Image (cartoon, rainbow, N blue to C red; front, side, top):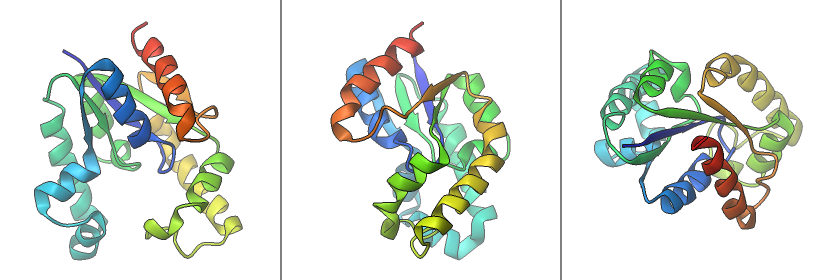
Length: 175
């Protein structure tokens, strides 16, 4: 039985790497945000709008505890998931947590190409985005750093790099 939780900041590649990791390890893949959206039949933005962040984080915690009992699965969490309630402890107790780590500069560059899809950053200039990412990453680092494994993502530049990157990640997980 395997449970692998991918954590890290938005734009780091949790979903992209998670899908491929699940495929090569013959495991099921779950994107926690997508799972929540399907369960509640609402987008994450709608859940935030209706109940605020506090209510969303309660939902996220409840659903995380549910999926943490699934077997043979790779779970990609939302960027903030490890930072609330006992979520990082839940994940560490249930399986292997992997922090996909990147610099604020790399994250801001990646996010700048798709910011219109992300309500928190869609109206930010490049400089504002970098400052926002750096500040948030600094706050979240103490939680992310509690993962069982820290894996640098500097090599994950585009989708063509995913296969080689995931093979390295799989090797580290299986050590």
